Image 1 (tube, rainbow, N blue to C red):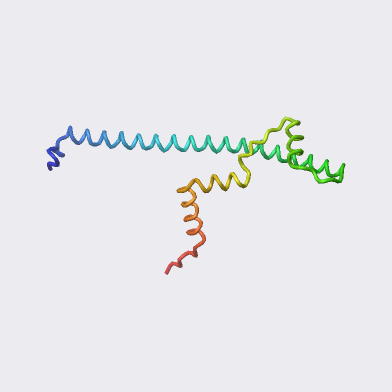
Image 2 (tube, rainbow, N blue to C red; image 1 turned 30 degrees about the vertical axis):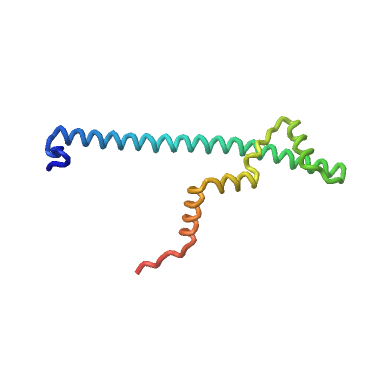
Amino acid sequence: MNIIGIELHDPGVQTALVTGALSLASGLVTLVCRYHLSARRRAEEKLRVATRDIAFLLAVERNYGEFLSKHQLPASKTHMRELAREEGLVWSGKFTPGRVAYRDSHNGLVVQLRRVRAILESMPKAEES
């Protein structure tokens, strides 16, 4: 067989085609593995930040409760956050409802795929005959 002047029955051409296909497959596997590793690292970093944020917000809540029990007055959230910072805790602010909603609204394809998946999962299963 002759395609564009290339003899496909020639063992050298077949070897080159197989080698090229394997190189392409190897590159794709490497790309997928690196993507998953970087996604995992990003998720682990988000988990660390979220864990620190939870510790911060728990300290704010504890300080708020102590303040209310002592003074019987409404306390401002900024004052409570300052008390938590004085304890050495840090709040990133990355996971506030507004920022999470903003981030989700700007991850176009991912959000759309999640919506399609949710719709498909909510659909009743077809009965087998």
